[in-house]
Image (cartoon, rainbow, N blue to C red):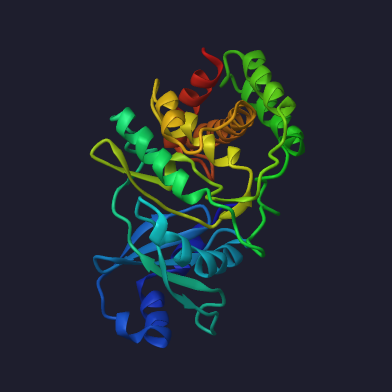
Length: 307
């Protein structure tokens, strides 16, 4: 779901300054400027080192912000790449009826606009990050319910079939049979039997930042949950350039077993199909479309299918 033009203009500098004066007065006079319009939230840069994130385009964004505030500060100190650490949780008020966050600001360019060019270095950086994140989650950790992520791959069969058929009809996939084969192999792989591990859950190119040709930060932990690491390991095919996935698998610890890699390839296919559709919509000026999502999705499918 995307916002309308009215939704965009309802959130502005005056509103944010009012919210800060009400709940974080020590921050209210800092320089403020729009940083990004994300899928769930608007991000406004607050001074040099902070940001304000306000939900604007999805009803689920409120719960995602509260989840980040509850869990991410405990995880962030152990992660080797910068992440947006929540500092303050703004509560709903008469001025703005939804929660909002003040977080640290993570510098860098989204990878959909500034792709990795130093593949070997980026592969190790991503492997180190996921090795640090993928630790057993405690009792009560969030589950992936409600966002179309996590659970057995077979649960996503209907969505995969729709996505593949639509992308094929649009002429976005030169060899749908090869994509189908990757998916069927992934679904046939044994399921994860280890403990639920902490996962980012949404590692696509717009949620990973780059600088100087390698990864510089990871943002948007709204889909943070505990589950099968395959959902994050899919990032090797989604985020890295040609020839770098093997280096990633060598550096990740413990080395992923063959069944996990098969499931990860299926997760990557799902992610790539989503990227194809969002990129196609952006190319044609449709709401919710982002032209920069198309090229990495096409490259991912080419790597996955050997095409």
